[in-house]
Length: 56
Image (cartoon, rainbow, N blue to C red):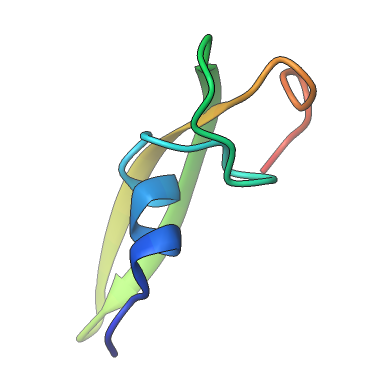
């Protein structure tokens, strides 16, 4: 299934996983997993200062 560019930026750690902000500093916020053709794909995600400490 295709992924839109905003979602891809969040999964690639280039935008806040919660709000999509790209303003720095972005800090590590854990991992999320997606699936593709039965394979589990882990993604290291980040959060903006307003959402740091929240779980994705």
